[in-house]
Image (cartoon, rainbow, N blue to C red):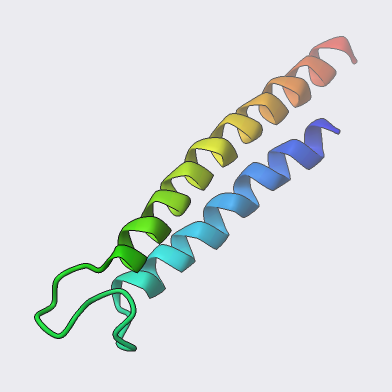
Amino acid sequence: MSWFLLAFGAWSWVIWVTFVKNLWKDGSGLAFDDAGSPTAYFWVHLLLAVTSFLLGTVVGLIGLRGVRALRRSS
């Protein structure tokens, strides 16, 4: 389970970093209006990404602690 949590934390960072990069250079008009200002879509999805970064970090750290505990007990 610890390895799964650690992998999930890392996966979360990979996915959401990629998402934020794509969001930042969005050309479809969803993330930025014609004047180049961020839209509500941008802010909502940025908030989702930041929340996922935080949760992924917490889950990954819990997994890391579990993996370290397993290695100490071996």
